[in-house]
Each structure stands twice: as C-alpha cells, then as structure tokens.
Length: 265
Image 1 (cartoon, rainbow, N blue to C red):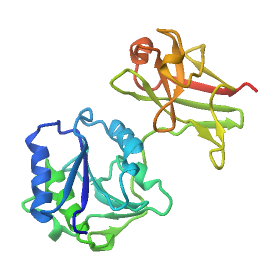
Image 2: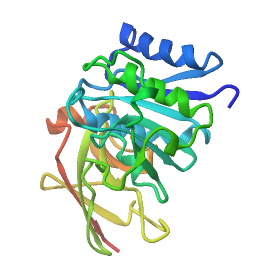
Image 3: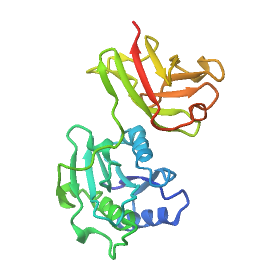
Image 4: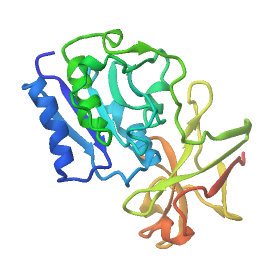
C-alpha cells in the first residue's frame, strides 16, 4: 500500500505528546502514511465511548483503512493485544471489548499479537499503543496478513455495549449509552429493525422513557422548545433529545436510562 490510511482513536487527549509518539512510530515505519485522528478526546478509560465512536464512524472510511485504538485501562496486565480484519478494514488495539464492533462483523478474523519481535523495544508497560499497536499497524500496512503478526483466536472479548431486547415484533427494550456534546443521548436501539432492516421505528411507534410517553420527531426543530423527543441519529440508532436543549440535563444521566418501544399500529 503506497499511502496507507491510519485512523487513530484514543483517550490520550488532543495535543498530547503521547499522540505525537503514536504518529512518530507509524511514520518512522511508513513515511508515506496518511494519518487521521478520529478522536483523542474519548473520556479517560471509557471503553464504551470509544466503542460508540467506532460504531458511528469506523466503516465510513475507505476499505483498507487501518484503525489504531488506544483506550486501554488494563495496559501492562495480562490482557491481550489483538488485530482484527473486518469488512475490508484492519483494527489494532487491546482485547478489552473496544474492538467489539469489528469483531461482531460477519467473517471477522482476529489474532492475538504474540510476535514480540515485531514490537518496538523496549516495551513500556504503560504505553502499548506506541510500542505494540503502532508498530503492528505499520507492519500490516506493508501487506503482511494477520497470520504474519499473530496467532488466530476465536475468544476475543466482544463489545460491552448492551444489546437491545426484542420481546416480540411489537416491543423493543433498550437503554441510553452516552451523550454527545449537545446532550443528545445515544441508544442501543437501531432505527430500523427486521431481517432486512425493513421496519422503521418512527411515528407508528410509542416510546416510553421514565414513565412518560415521548413522541418521535424526524428533526430537532419539529418539536416545541424544551420538549423531550426520540429521533433517528445519524448512525441509524435512536437517540433521545430535547428540542434546543439537553436530554442529558433533563434526564440527569447519560447511561442506563431505559426505553421501551411499542408499535402502536
């Protein structure tokens, strides 16, 4: 690959020297690399927020993209480092569930990174992003297959995002997973359900949140100011919002608020 594209996601903080170190290691091995920052402002140690960022964004990048994910609260322990091939993309990061969105894709392949000679040495026990993930990502950019950087495994840790519950074809139970900067609450409920995603959860459904019925609106401006609504997020999952306000402030929590969706007609 002449100009491989690397997408970096971390909780290291924008402007952090640690981010610069990640990029330096990649560029030293692949000088023609293109580097793109998905985000380095993932809340510290928040695997869940990193998963949401990847869920919403990773597969929008072109096939062949190499994702390096450094949200690694268990760095230096016996947790494994892994690489995943999924839908034409490659992901490198810790085996802590943060790569669950990739692992869940049909046909995904996973290896544990046990080819220590490919790592950067000495390996800092507190920064595997620089010394393990970045050099392995650069090696994969040369066209080396997954089997050339590690041993295949079938028990990688899956996503920690809770799945929705489909009680029947008329009832879906879910919950909020986190908030964006506007206070809109992301959920685990897809906006389209059914074998082929043919059924849209929209005006023909009732949404119950904290004991109140909340209307569906297709845009934030379609409701009166201050009204709590359900809408379809850009990632095709439902989100809870307040028209020209903050659902996070209204509800008082980012995660775990229960939502019940019931088909009305």
